[in-house]
Length: 135
Image (tube, rainbow, N blue to C red; front, side, top):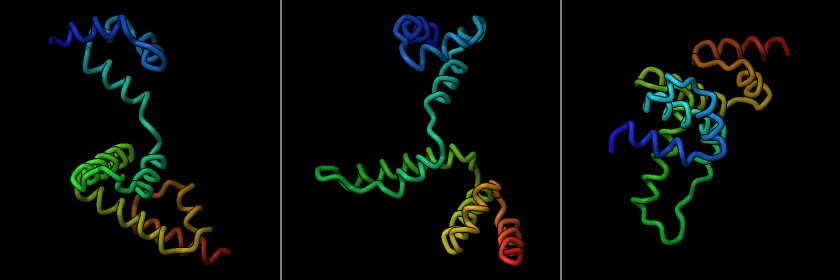
């Protein structure tokens, strides 16, 4: 099936949020399958906190195999990291350090760091010290 065929089928069957997104795209851009797909996926993308909560709460279901569960967990982590724009080892390392640091400090300072959207581990530690000394 060609991209053009997929777009023509989609154009006639869209509903809800996908319909709204499709109608907001210019006529020229509607002919670009990759662009349309990206915009629609962005519209359905959840906030990083939702993905993070899903990962933490995800447990193996009754008839689900361990392999199926591991795939579901991996997909959830991929979505979470993607929503946080984490691509590459250095960004992943910083991301994990920042998350783990916040888990090990008092809630008040952790909330302050979250509100400041700190993404660098060393900067986060300095800001935490500053916050602690000013309190």
